[in-house]
Amino acid sequence: MPELDQQDHPLVLLTGASGYVGGRLLPLMEQQPVTLRCLARSPDTVQPRVRESTQVVRGDVLDPSSLTAAMQGVHTAYYLIHHMSDLQVIPIPVSTITSLRSRGGKP
View 1 (cartoon, helix red, strand yellow):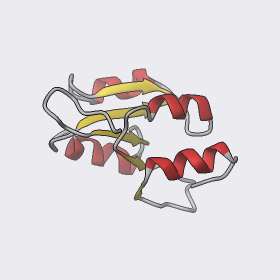
View 2: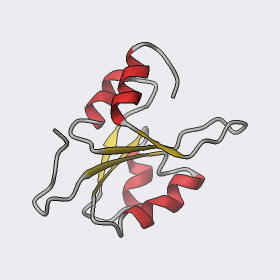
View 3: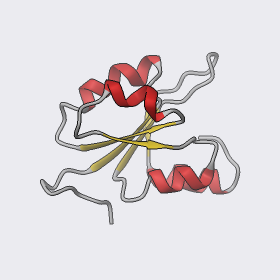
View 4: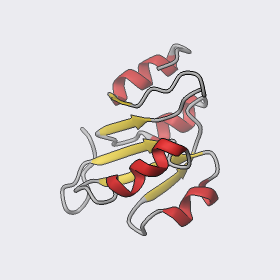
């Protein structure tokens, strides 16, 4: 069951918060009734950009164990990691990301 905070807000994972699109989505997500968690390879880069209530966790979408840990209790995940030639900005169900990564796939 997805984790809810004390105010019954769903936990949302945002990847790519230090990037162009994710960096613009971050302040918009912080205004929503959600508990926001950002996955970052370098949390020190993201931490100064977020509100105190936003969680920043170290991880990499290419590292299945860190991705699994970051997605613990997550209701919705926004996967905003891309190659410069292949930008995709869509919410992907957590179960889809986990399943793909466990088989070595790419969302």
